[in-house]
Image 1 (spheres, rainbow, N blue to C red):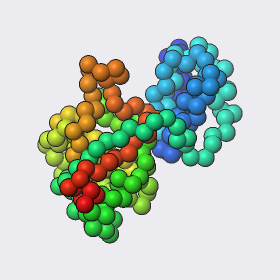
Image 2: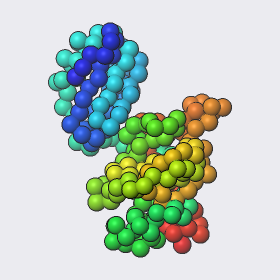
Image 3: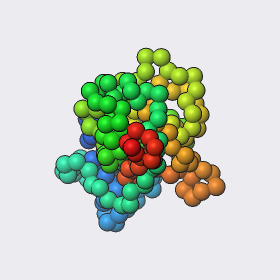
Image 4: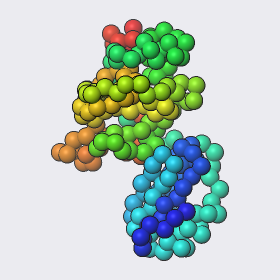
Amino acid sequence: MLRVGEAALLVELADGAAAEAFHAELLRRRAAGALSGVREIVPAARTVLLDGVAEPARLAAELSGWELRPGHARAGEVVEVPVRYDGPDLPEVAARWGVSPAEAARIHSAAEFRVAFCGFAPGFGYLTGLGARYEVPRRATPRTAVPAGAVALAGPYTGVYPRSSPGGWQLIGTTDVVLWDTDREPAALLSPGTRVRFAPMSGTEAGR
């Protein structure tokens, strides 16, 4: 656990699963009114930053004594993202999983995801939920341009590109959902802790 400036703590966890569990516990306690004095909670792959901490030393001592619940809580409404499973890398992903493209699409759409953290671009969430069995590597050669709305996999994560940008993730589908809209409040559709499901659109692999 590290002090960051005068009013923040950076908590380092063993791995992504531990970071998610810790973040979920922070959200649970804050919702219950038991985490006063913390203005912002920012999760990352293996860390969680607590900013605006009135008494960092006291909070650090309190956090070190927490016993985290196994897994992470599934609370709140689910954001549904309609998707066409038409990505150019879907056949390769399916081959890695040892299934047909249609079955790969069904596996992906059957899972419930959770936004572990956000980054890379405004509105981009790193979603977990598929499990280690379905991890895939990034592409050996990244694409110079990935279209906005591309649904993609890399390592343990699923993500949706909020805008066109270079990228090396495996593209398995597309969505018309707007991930980042400055005229919306909040601008980001997905935030850490959000539950997400991908709903296959008719006429695509999982919708047949």
